[in-house]
Image 1 (cartoon, helix red, strand yellow):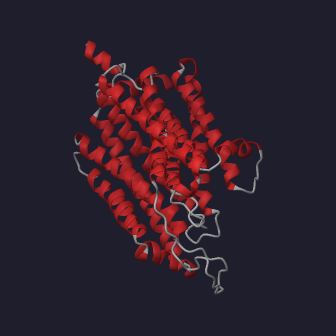
Image 2 (cartoon, rainbow, N blue to C red):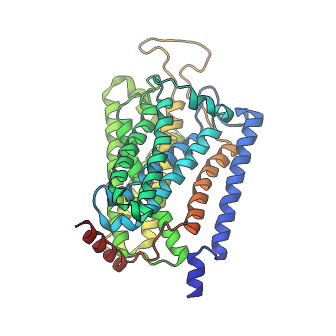
Image 3 (tube, one colour):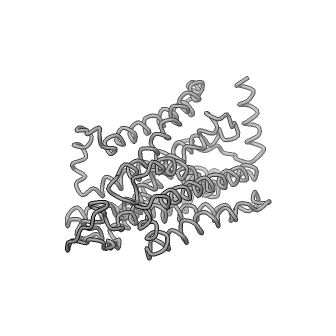
Length: 407
């Protein structure tokens, strides 16, 4: 009994080892940011053609996953799935942690983080970047209020309303993130309204994958039971979310193939793009989508925790591959300055823009992931974001009690 209580309170050696590792990676990321700030972005792999590098891949993935991580709480309070209600606080916590980790990377990768106050006080409302500042801050505000209504018993009656506002705002947040690329008409890789619904669909699978991994790790490390029926529900949801994301990827590329002006870009990404083509087919499609679905379609998936964890890990890896192809691949393709005209100069005309991420960029990106991990790890230790039991019997009893209260 003492051993179990010690683990639940986060007093085991493994907990402090995890905490120390996350702190070390965070410090490495901050050191990399200082190094790039001190020496300039010349020490990175970025250049005048590829201005958004690997840190942006990490940042956008974390922001998109943050929106999807809130989906578990939304299913309970917005869509009436009472079996997910005990997991609502963890869902909100993970959404906040992922967003803060992503925004930290984004801010430190700008080159002049000290100028952030200018961006927050002087707005160009024709710019999607200015609008996203309101979307990010609004999302954090709504999720904090949502968590308050879930964890303060006197405020429980306001949870459905707070959940509805948070759900609508997270849809707007993901739409704004996708529109960052969709509104860039100068890039053939972007310039598509389909990127907004594509990012919404991707957020569902990315966020659920991260949530599953964190939930399994937290329960395993603290000795909490985790019900088979709950994991089976998550597995079925993950299959649907992966299929939805893959469907919108297919529609996006078929739409581009319909327009002649995008044929060169599609040939680049799908056939002749080297690393980008490999990451698209092998990382994004095969390992990040098809293989996880095949793993999760097993009829006894509820008893196959390793399969569930492996599929969630593959979805996360495929998500990073997809963000790399979208962000880096979109900039690597030669910029068409004058559509329909032939232009000749010695300044990279028609040349695929090279990019190779440097060590500081890797460290900064992983530093953002570690910041999110630190927030979750410390919050699970000091605050009650997880119930002590998550087995099927406890969840059924909680669901029945919630149903009785609502009636």
